[in-house]
Amino acid sequence: MPKPKQPSSISSPLFPLGDFVATPAALNLLQGHGINPLLLIGRHIQGDWGNLHGDDCTANDAAVTLGHRILSSYSVGEKDRVWIITEHDRSSTCILLPSEY
Image (cartoon, rainbow, N blue to C red; front, side):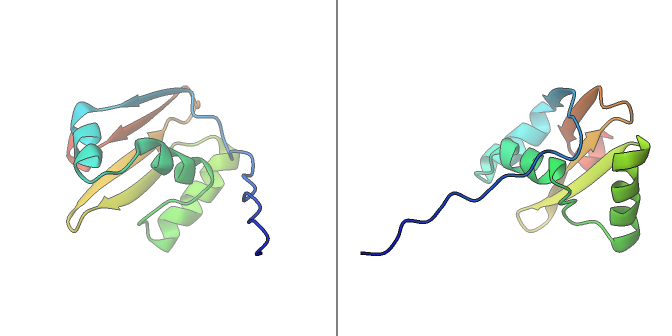
């Protein structure tokens, strides 16, 4: 009989989220594609910045320690995306559509 898989370890978040909010439009888009917003939040706080270019990823990496705003961008379906933004003071994190920024 095969040995059961051990649960994967979850490392500590890189930064606090503060208050967590999301716009109705972002939640509707995610729901329409069957995506749990908490999965994206999990990626965000672990340093998976989604679909950002190298310079933006480097800026986010520095922002974690310097206390600047952190932005992640995740594709939803073929043409849409959502952003997750954690404020510089870590008071709040928001999931929104780019058009809502």
